[in-house]
Length: 318
Length: 246
Image (cartoon, rainbow over all chains, first blue to last red; front, side, top):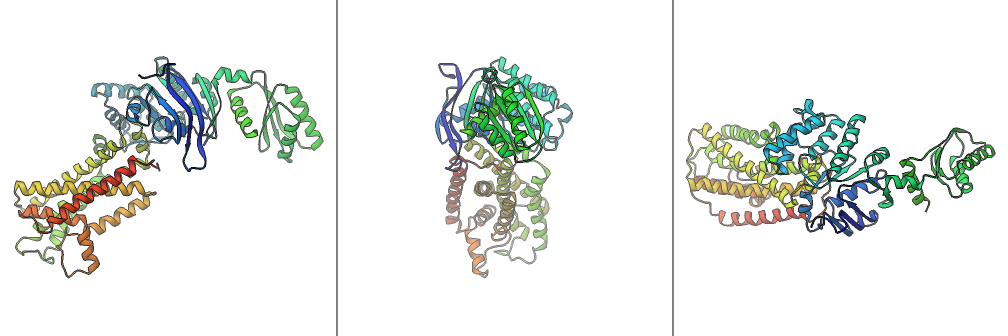
């Protein structure tokens, strides 16, 4: 058996993990991922995305909860799970060898037959634009080149699920787009992809479903379109103050804008609201009564970023 | 093991593994030959030194094993390998076998080097098997010890300092370069007696001489027991606990 009866290749129920026995890096996470799905984990640094990837890839043993990967129990069938997954980790990981040496070693480690190994190596070096640096040591490459080597190297072997922990870090725009297109193409062929990022445009572009993660919890989880729909009726108002007591200003604004979400960060704030006219009126009114001047005031449509900020704001306000 | 050999066959590792013991053989062999008394008094110091320097290879190979693990932690490959199609034990044994291979290969190179320097060496097949067998056992002991240390220390500087200290003390407080003497200060006598490299060097020398020294009767079983314990501890560090990645 490789999938659950519902066709899920990943099933996670109430997963919790703590490193120090006090704080939970994962705190009751529950979700499923279907075969061929690109599932995004969206969250700021330290939200718990990487801990979740580590738990899913058998690198850490979760403190509690249920976990099934391809119908297997990672705790007791870890090696079988690892045979069928690929992982591109967030940090650098290279052998002291040339770029093509790293590909060769990886192919041998995964038991890829020699002929296929050499063929794949050449294809990947070409498609990831690494031919010119193939004889250079991996450690001597630029940040973007290193990232390309890490992602391309993982493609040396067959897999059912690919875990990508912020794979586009350091990539230029063109290479980033090509990588995302490649992920989509692989997913169309049946590969399941779990993808962490804090780049919202990427998640919007490549993911079928997205979970917004913060402080070890899933704050929202749905298709990108549905998440956006949640906020479709709303608009985003952006404000930047030129000085004065921003904390008091935004505190007063929150009290006056019942039903709107105000996310303040220093002198700036983002307001998600159903009634942008009312929000603007209140902001201008407050500016006049307090004497606090504004540098910037703008109204725009919602993006996935607003969904993310809205989800995080709700938790912080709770 | 393919990966470990490919990654570690670089000039730096080879200098540590082969160059340093080779220099010991040349400089100590010629420099101290006239000063160091040989038990029995008939053989040359170079002949006495050869099995000792071959034994040093198990310590050098052990340090290479520890360094492999440390480098894998430091450069992210440990985490990457542990999400690969292997168990943690297989990873550990891969390093262990690489240490063993390096230890035996290094000992063979020293044997050939000694033959070229001295011009002749006499050893029976059984004696050679004994010498290489005990060097293999020593490689596993020191490989396990250095893996254990590499797993426990938290910084590169700490690991390097400990490694240098171990190399110095274990090499020179052993019977590699000179025989045990009751005239040594008591603490150094104790170090000699508890030093596993002493057991390896004595047994390897016994293999060359065609007769095991009487102390081998307790030293070799003790070496086996110590190897089992240290190997178990090293395995426990990597298999039973969450590994910290640097």
